[in-house]
Length: 119
Image (tube, rainbow, N blue to C red; front, side, top):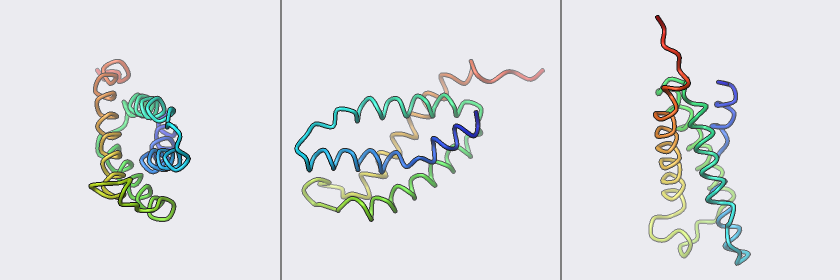
């Protein structure tokens, strides 16, 4: 379960969020999968993080954020119109923080059911 959590959390979801959203914007189409995909990602990674220490959750999400920023720099143009008023990098950081907060919320709700007390 820990390996699944690491693999899913290392997936650059903040980058993929903005990449998909921007590509749909360029095509003049609605990003219909964006909301459902984001919620499912947060729910699954939040549930899987129930047995992981908080410092590791923050550390792996930090690595994911750095990876997302690097990928965003190379694959998403920093268009002033689309990322107004904050810019591409701040938008990616914001989504990463929202995903981390969502993981912590799901983790705190599911943790009592997943972690067994030691006696």
